[in-house]
Image 1 (cartoon, rainbow, N blue to C red):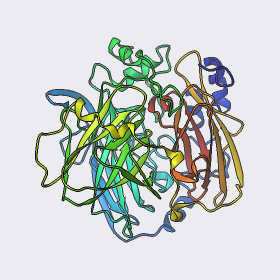
Image 2 (image 1 turned 90 degrees about the horizontal axis):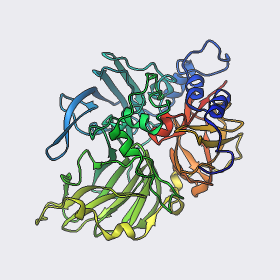
Image 3 (image 1 turned 30 degrees about the vertical axis):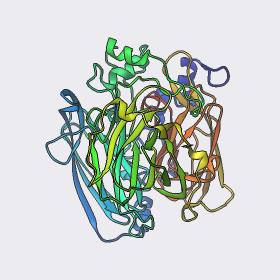
Length: 520
């Protein structure tokens, strides 16, 4: 661990947690849904301001309805290898990711969630500026959906773009409890003839360890198992298989400033399929294709590329960007990128290579007239574009239509990301960590300093920000590198209870989160 303010003891982090550092116990206590001790000027998820804001969102009058069943089942993640896991399905079948949900900007989305698991759960609609009581982040915005229970999510979709949904309970999202949510733009000017959804994931469940056992192995002295989202069960036993996955180093990437991730994932998937059995997407020859790429991994960053082509970045986290042509793109967990590519005739690997250590995921994109041998296996993931020009957020700019207007901030919040040298414990500190109180209509600036030894994908709920560190690029999740201070601006236009947290699922479970509470 590095010297300095991040190098504090476990006891110190817990003590600071009660005051705003948000170690494991501090975050849970301060983000609880009890309101007895809260100030009367807080805007709660049940208050009328939530409905009033929702009523201002443009609405097409159209409702799109889905039913998601949270369930356990046995699935094949590689040919001939079956594992037990949890996931979402709209029918009795279960794959290694949930169904893709599609709607148009301004539609009302109605999703009935039926929880058939033996544990409580939730669904968070990542990257969407939706009404606060539908955010799906227990205990802040709803009670967890109990085993055998149901919950109806009902909200208007105010923004088009590539988004996703996932469980926000414990480390359930490191199973198959996630899927894509595509909000189509009726005024799309990209020129794409079609679009393909490519969801990347790092997979561990069923390979000798569950995500909960991995969390326990990362912190064998006892914080594992007390993850956010209402789960406060005792941690499972630390198994040899889980220890093997977390004792093989942390990876290393010069692009990300050093160590990359804790877990040596045994498998990486695209749309629930392994490199040995990749999904084949076919389109007409001569098509202009929009690739909607979603990193649903729990902690793995990837660089992505399409063999034989340069790609053009046209959107980040659902917001249009100035077109930028490149060979490959870096994408952090929870981020989305939209790529535009013109295809002629042929069959090509689309590869997501793990940044900083071995591993890759694979899909195949082909035209209808393409013939020849199928592409699969590790050899198909070795494409030169991955070592060509790499685009990061520093290379990208927001499109003029998505650029946040220049304005002096009404509030400045300074946060500092923390790690403990005495165990797997992460937090958020700073004088503002426990006192982020926006008012409707304010411009907020957040400075997120990262003195820790690792990079962190920092996610803001319910809003998108302009990263002043990255040319004003619009995102809801930003990679904050070691030694870097990210400067993020957003407009406080979505009242209620929100949070900012690291989207490394295991850092979040171990405490790297802080609450945001609108006040009147």
